[in-house]
Each structure stands twice: as structure tokens, then as C-alpha cells.
Image 1 (tube, rainbow, N blue to C red):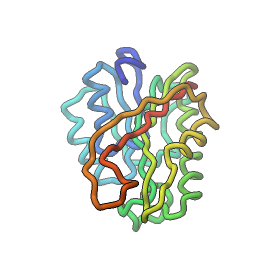
Image 2: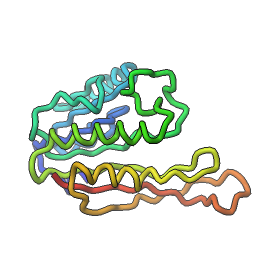
Image 3: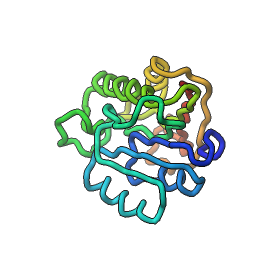
Length: 189
């Protein structure tokens, strides 16, 4: 995706950077990378990993407050933090999306983040957001579809790609299959 949607030397931004995988790929493709990770320990681990990759910067921060100049980003590539996980549930400041227990609060935080992210993008810049629908406590949660609606408030939705992978089943429920997929939501500023 980085090679297809950006040019060498351009800035690739991952607002939910985690371990820094997007920034590693940006470096391999000759792009500058900037990532934000809300968890300090994870951000530090990513910085150590990225030391071997020139032109990459990882900070600990809030995706809703990116410290980038307006119009400076050429491409956004990220995997959204999923709603309904058991990760980082003790965080209380709202910056840790995993800790948000109310779905409307989660979508509101996404809306705020997407608005801030869009402001960093130059006209014509592309965004690719990886997200999948969820099953929580036996119920279907249309996270990918809701995220697309929220993203569309800030950027022009252009397409979707679907990343398929096998996942073992866990039970006798005929509604659960071993096929899983992520949507790659594609949008333009």
C-alpha cells in the first residue's frame, strides 16, 4: 500500500502506531514515517525497534492531538484499535481507545481522531484504515461499517479492499467460520 499510494521521501503517518510496523514498512519503501502510540512502554519498544530504520519517528501521545503541521502528511496508514478488547482497560484519560467501554464514546473518539488526522493531510493525500467488524459477547458489532461512516465525515471515501486470512474456529456455532477479513477503508483528502 505504501509503495502504491505514496512516493519516495513522502511522509507516512500512523496515528495508532503500536509496535511501529507501518514505520518499518515506510523506511523499507524510502518514505519518512511518523507514528503516535498512546502506551508509553509500547512506544519505547517501537522506538528501539525503529533505531535500525532511518527517517522514522515514534512518539507517545494521543491520536486526537497529532503534533504535525496542517497539510504535511502525504499518506495515513493505520490499523484501528478495536472496540471491546480486554487491553488497557484501566486507562481513564480517553486517549486509550481500548479502554473505552461505551460504543458511542468509542465512535466519538474516532470522530475526533479522524478530524485531527484529516487536518494534517495535504490535499490529495490518501488514507488507508484497517478495521474489522467484531463479535463481542456473542453479538455482531459493525465496527468497520461504523468507522467508514465516521471517516467519511472528514475525508472522501474512495474504495475498500479486503484482506482475507484463515482463523481457526472455536466452537460449534454455525455462524462462526474460519474465514476472517479486515476492511482496508481507502479515502482521500
